[in-house]
Amino acid sequence: MTQIAQWDNFYVIVGSAAGALIGLQFVVLTLIAERPFAGAEQAGAAFGSPTVVHFGSVLFLAALLHAPWRGTTVVSAIWGLLGLAGAVYAIIVARRMRQQGIYKPVFEDWLFHAALPFAAYGILGLSAFAAYAHERDALFAVGASALLLLFIGIHNAWDSVSYHVFVHTAKARNAAPRNEIK
Image (tube, rainbow, N blue to C red; front, side, top):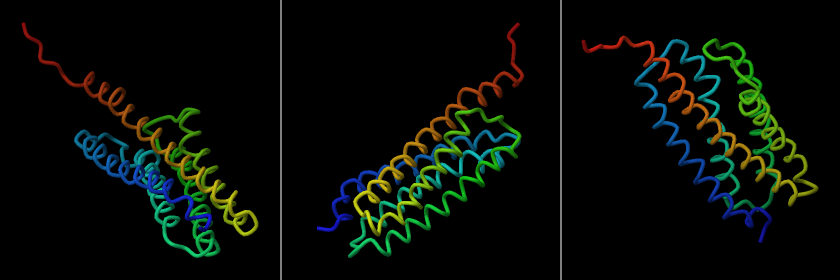
């Protein structure tokens, strides 16, 4: 049995979770779309889209590593490219966060939307190089990256929904004219 094959159950669980959470993100986005607000497009590119990208990356990793590969040479090159692309994307997200004007990001936002995704994708990219000499350790690094991206996505999805429910909706209600009974 190859090292990758020993990870089958892990990637079935992680991939299923990522797929389900992608679907849930679409449902939430549909509900939020009923009350659009100024600047929503920029904020979505900075805070919403990356969450789906992270879930998609986890789903892709699960499919990639669940395939019947004979070794890690090709698959590690693919996950390495995903890691590199994800790290570049994390930098783009950080730039979008800085440029959007609807919300001023706090430390937690920078941590979960920029720093941790950059670290997860960086570990993924570096583990591709380690796979040749330390296959078992590299697969643990890939698994850790996948879990980190999954938990980042869960955090960011919850943070986004909480913001829309408790902050944005409350502001909209307070700004709406009230019908007073006399």
